[in-house]
Length: 154
Figure 1: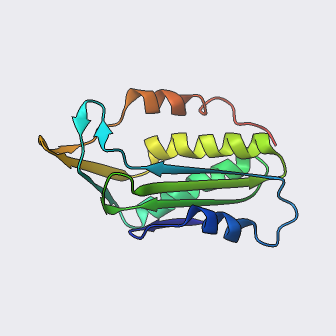
Figure 2 (figure 1 turned 180 degrees about the vertical axis):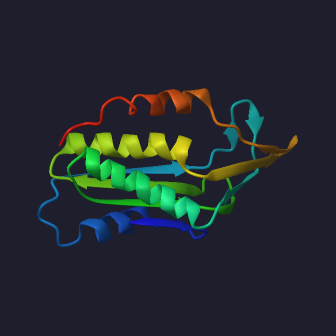
């Protein structure tokens, strides 16, 4: 399940909804990304996340499908917020559910690494020194590179 939305989300409620009534799930992993008040060496008061409607959902769906191809997942959820955000606000939620913890952990890491580098979202930070569009970070690119090797086999 993939959603791009302006509204906040409830991580616990989303996890419960994902695994409700399932007896084939032995492990679930969730990741919540929050907006920080400081990015690198710059104070940030607000951040605006923009996306290309339709394209962002398509790419997120493709990333989710790739995770399901690589790992034996029973279920997954990706929620990404857009619009204006303040420090402390939740930005992204990734939940993966599998029979075993290793697959759930690896798939969640894969999804976050690829979300940071492949999903069509643009961030503009605003603070005391003005506005600035956020460029991709080499650390994120390097993290995503580990998944370009041969896919994990189920």
